[in-house]
Image 1: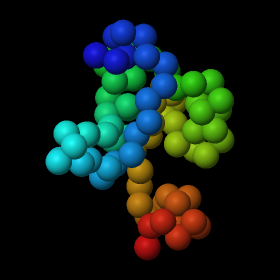
Image 2 (image 1 turned 60 degrees about the vertical axis):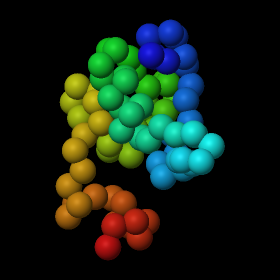
Image 3 (image 1 turned 180 degrees about the horizontal axis):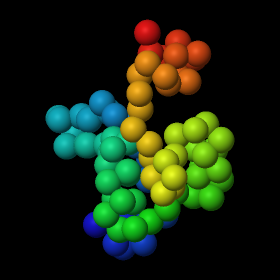
Image 4 (image 1 turned 90 degrees about the vertical axis):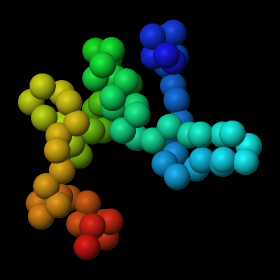
Length: 79
């Protein structure tokens, strides 16, 4: 709904839901789904960063992650 309304920026914070306050955040896959469904692209500077990081496929979509070959291993994110 936000994407169709023209929202240009959303904050995605997985696991930041608060049931008592009725607050639910977006997760990263929500933003990916919205972009894919609406045919939208990431912000130019973010898309450039994704490409430099090797996270885009040939069509400009987020590439599937191969944990064995991921550069995230260098950051200690994947062990």
